[in-house]
Image (cartoon, rainbow, N blue to C red):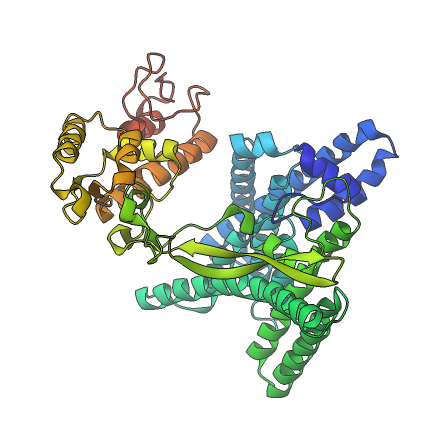
Length: 513
């Protein structure tokens, strides 16, 4: 919280991927502190409170809109009693969210979450405004405005893009008759739009700026930022040509798409404050993204590394010596994903200082939907605690241990620990340097069980219920059995617990973390 207050007041650079629009609006709000240092936190927190209030207002308007749609009524057709019922539904829904744990306790923090909530609520409310006017000749103005706000919202928090699926499905519901085929197609298009915005438009812009900067400075010998200027000119020319071409086609859909993309990029331009301020070398200048190359890495959050989503390695690759492929010289195989550059003021060029890479993992440890993939020893211990230790076999392919009696003895001792469930991550790591065992990766069933019961059940569903049903205590919960809780493993009780609370005994005092 203190990081964002400081960054907003003095327009400093926060951790990646930044919050450019939050900082700009915070700098405006800090004017009302009247130059008194003790008032800065008050006005930034007040700005968050104001954003939270607008979040509830937009949510109220959205709920009343959808209730009216459920009644299939236009404004002039609603009776007095229906109007009261609609307003009551809106008030109830909005206040439920108001007093939910997460929203209530972050509503006045000097953080990005209240402003991000406001942008999500604003985006959904804007698509309801389009729905009211969808038959009008100029209804596309709402779509263009929505994409402009999406561009702005990236300057607050990436989670604002989660409003895109809701927007696309509302558009589908208004324009198309439901069939399973059309619904599935609409969801696929929705994913495509989300990927286009999140993984293509903005990353491609940052990549273009970075590549041109390297070419103009290192290749043509021009000063720093010359490639950035060229990229601005090129992007402006592309936007002009796209709009001009869409206008010549005389097709409304092309014009809407072209204007939406261009206005989204204009909204995204609020990010310019980050490299501008980074060049001023403020006291807090995390990652120092003062060039187009630095901004590309800053936006892509390179400092946090990469992880598998659909296909990739399991955590067992780090327990098995052959889990990562090796070159002939014994070094690990790497898949180069990019170069690391550093600005060299003396030579006036960008000096290559390293490479970004991913390790090439052994195919025996790669699978579809790997949910358990962390190499951290504590996290691997949690995997083992949840689903048992991974099975293993003696590595007869290793000639150094195949006929070694001592190796056989160590394997038998390790196997005995495995059989009585006392084996630990440290035991696997002790024998890893000797290439003594072949470790089996978790099955797809185990990965999906972890995804459904732990990541969704224990993390998401429990968290959701805390917000909208209530909780009996404030214990963090680590899937443990404690004397205080007197409970079994949480994921085995979660559904029963909430069914009892909601349906049968709302005042039942169960000690569940």
